[in-house]
Length: 417
Image (cartoon, rainbow, N blue to C red; front, side, top):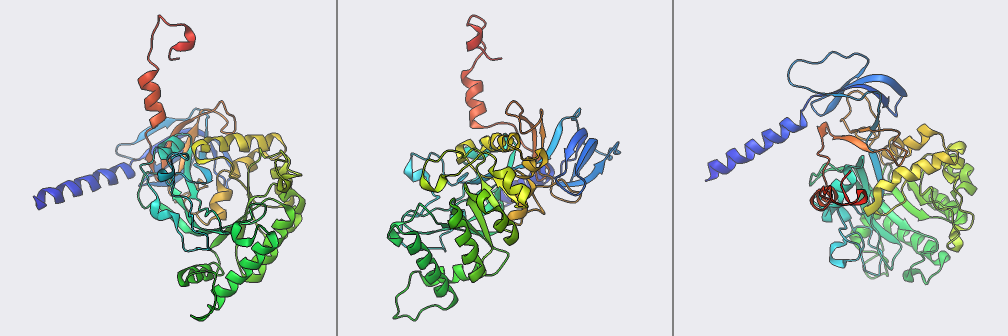
């Protein structure tokens, strides 16, 4: 029995290795390398052993079995970033037992780590993947406190341990002032400064404290670069306070939200702090959003700020493309719009050696599109993650195929195209 199980396991591993090692030649593509080579027309890309082996024109096909795909001039990009979200740690947002992205404890617990709840078998993973997204950043948000916990970048290849890069800490400031701070922005910064003081010099056992010992140790780690701390802040004054706070405590900050970031673009650029934003945010739905504008991304990029797109919820991650396209329509250069979905988020979170670029020697995480990927009428024709072509199937496509049957007797609106 044990021998049979061993053979079965070995066979499964060999099959998986063979899938990973598949040789794919993509010919005649418009290759957006998002790297030093720029955009290459009518170019071939050879993928073997899970990595990009060659990029060039009229490449020789290697010996042995190879899948050849004629792109016929279609765009080939790095896989897209699905933003900060809950893919794999949330199934149905209205069903509380299926949501693992938040902690309800009314205290600061920076040691809270959502990656332990990640489920690669979530229906959201293939739904997002077949839309051209190959990686995401798991977010952590604790209600009733300021420090939300930790997340990490995960590749959407369906693996149980597909995490890459360093852990990321989340801090929420601004209008979402927690009960812990007495609903005061000033109270938030007071508590955050006290928390950092605890992390750097833990109080004695008989002294009052804000965090557990593990929380103090965790927070201390984020004062050592390159680990990133994501501050959710929209108001310009809050963003400036983040810059001062981060410099004081040696943190490596990223701004998420940033609806008024354009007002302090020069300060962000000077500090080298990137911004993850929703380019569609343009309504003053609260006092922190007064001054929101559609050309926020364009103004930030023009000032030299690194911009990435992260706006919609996990169930609609595909809309990230539309957001980047809107940013382009409001002045962001087209290649900068693509960078906001590929190289920028990959580099911000220190995973640019695996995602966000098409570069010789890198793992092959690429997408072949039917047309301009920033146009909503385009679609992903081929998604390759770590050298493996992914099946373009999800729960949504299966439901479509099951229930949208051909019926010539029905009017055109009711039959499958």
